[in-house]
Image (cartoon, rainbow, N blue to C red; front, side, top):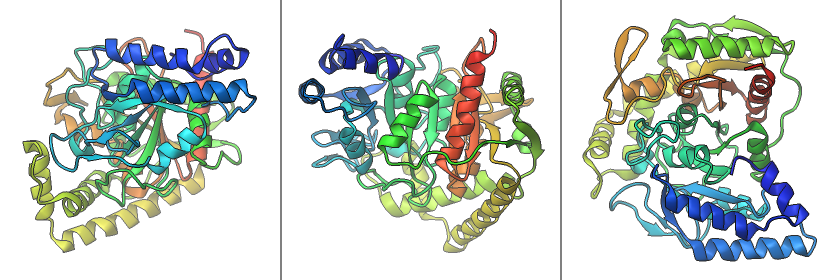
Length: 424
């Protein structure tokens, strides 16, 4: 199921029903070997599909998502499903009502078919137990790896995730799909398990920017306003520490924009090099506040929560001060251009089990590599969209950062449609 347009047209012509779409998605989820799903509920999904079919037959059309199967990350409440947050025991609960973001998608007619795999408590950039559909020997990234895999594998055309330190953009880049991190405060986080509340954001995965736009409309995110006339490529040295194929994809993306008459300039973002450290300290402190002391969690997350519990108030305040300086630098850069370009990940998907990855002549811990490019938007609350670059090998994502979700998505649209038009 590659996107919304085809199934939507067949639904409205009567050539297909929501029930048949949902049955196909459920069968694909059952056959999947990527580990994308942790739970499906055929009975409730088929009942919702039947209701969507009745509405369409009766002349009620809720829009592009009406009758379309979608998936939801397992730290987001879906009524009737257990929310397990990827953990063996901590914080499990049977959701009595939908999270706000799920409720908005359902109001637009979407049909939830299941919950997707996440790193434990969403506190990590790898999703254990999840395989990359582009190469099953490689990781999906995380923590929303299950949602990215479900879309990349074609099981569903749309999935919800969350992004605190890059957890939508990282797996989107590694799996070759579009991933949207909403700007901070764009939607209520009601019904979503917190990790670091001042950085937690909801996000969307799809195979195209058009489909993401349809999902954002359902989520009541304001559409873009104005045009993209100038885009900045972040020229700071830290932004250039990427694998060669990532650098080549970014350069190709610049040419795609220029071919459409967009001015592309190098831009420095003051204090941006502090973003990974500031984001990490904030996440440590806030996650410990939410979850420590923890029982029933794995060693990796327990160690992070213990570390967070030992973050001193002065260090947390210093990280918040750094955040303010970084945001000021980002705002300054965005007064010169309409959006910024940055790789979604500095590396392509590493093999499963890899602890280190080679990047710019250095061996770097996988988690550190994955947050190097995503921390800027995470710590500042900016909107960011990872869009796949046209490459022959493993997927590479290019990140568009802007003050609003609409502007970031518009920049991504220019890249996506321009790349599709470019000769192969």
